[in-house]
Image (cartoon, rainbow, N blue to C red; front, side, top):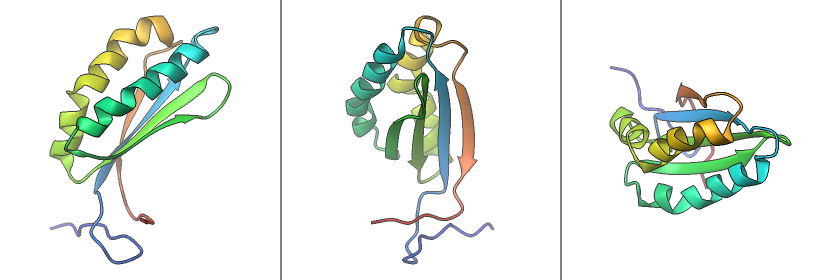
Length: 111
């Protein structure tokens, strides 16, 4: 059985995450930033989503990084309202489809 990752404080931590890279269409950068900010209340309502970050990596490059205790939390998020809204808005907002990467969390520094 794989060991559950631990934080530097020795506490159990989330095991899995998602990293979603988003490239805004030219002229859509402000709309993408607003879309991501407006998604925060939805993330806060998801019981299985432990952390959720909306990031801007460059002028037109954005990302979402979120973590989950287990695979069921991650799958619930992927089937939830943020993912649905992201896919619905993708043709209008993004230069290419969102690049969704599943990640296993090895270690973390927690507050």
